[in-house]
Amino acid sequence: MAPQRRVGYLWDTLYGWVDSGSGGFTPADPSLGLQPISHHIAHADTKRRFHEAVQVSPLADVLSPLKAGLAQEDDLLRVHTAEHVEWIRSQSENTKGGDAGDGASPLGRGGYDIARRASGGAIDAVHAVVNGDVDTAYALINPPGHHAERARGMGFCLFNNVSVAAAYARDVLGLSRVAVVDWDVHHGNGTQDIWWEDPSVLTISLHQDRCFPPESGFREDNGAGAGAGAALNIPLPPGSGNAVYERAMQNVVIPALEVFQPELILVASGFDASAMDPLARQMVTQRGFKTLTRLVLEAADSLCQGRVVFIQEGGYSPYYVPVCGLGALEILTGVDTGFGDPYSPVLDPQGVDDLYEHQRIEIAEAQKLVKNVPRP
Ligand code: 3YP
Ligand code: ZN
Image 1 (cartoon, helix red, strand yellow):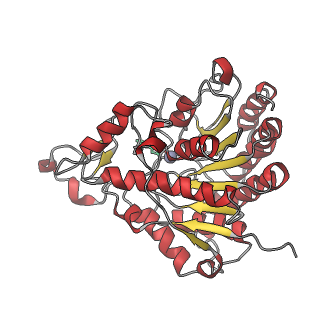
Image 2 (cartoon, protein in one colour; image 1 turned 30 degrees about the vertical axis):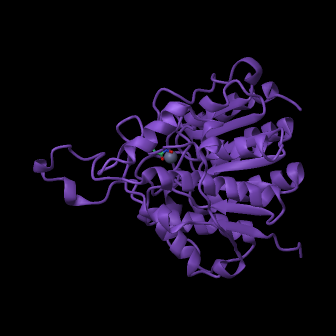
């Protein structure tokens, strides 16, 4: 039997206290009467429940807990403008908080520090893996980050946690090539923006075509200048499930990683490509997320001594995010929780493993871009 991997796991109580506000996706005027129907769709309870599921599972005995520090201003300034950092800091001082930039990214009072704790968690997980304290790590952080661009927050994202961690790996830990595999169902536009002209970070985004942001993530967008070829977009048609994502991984993502030869892989790990998610129309199940996790882990084993760090992004089904999250952690640890996928009787008959010609075509088109990925 292969020696067990040491798997770091990171959560902070404050991640479960992110104030997603009372607005957003509900009428602004409470007199319309729809406001109290439920939580904001990005309510932190979904991620807190994932964390609690981990704690009551056998995983709690084998994971190595990691502690999240605060990202410092210079950590943020590696990838964000001073104006953006100052905007978040000042919004966070308002009695009722504010918004990160697009009117759909609420933060509560004190949200600056929680966002810095999320970026700090990503940094600390990367530090632990590169330093060899653990072999791999899952940073269950909140709020998410992949939509946040250099100069503005958007799509529930304040700071681009994955990019803050990639910049730390490069500038502080001295790595020269970091790859980001973003399987959140939405486009990782912020990560792409930040590294657009930089060949040291390969950004790969698998996403539902034109889901969010609607006008980004096209296959033709590949970076510019020195970074030409180092941004890869794999837009997938709505209805894509396990087999589609697995094929995209096998035919595009892994070959791209093989060309790029990263020293570290960061997974922007959203669970919103799931068949249960309210913010997208894909059909990945726990089984699919387990396969994706296994594939990226195998790639990391063969390319970079298993150095891969999972950093939480989206996922909005309070029912299914914990199930998918446990699945990913089962693969990382090699430990079966015994919990299984209680939703598979409902989901499996729906064609979650189907693969259609129009989906094959999209993957084949994306595959053509692998040859343009920069080599070391
Ligand atoms: C942000 C506003 C509409 C869709 C929503 C997407 C958030 C997300 O999970 N991004 O990865
Ligand atoms: Zn998302």
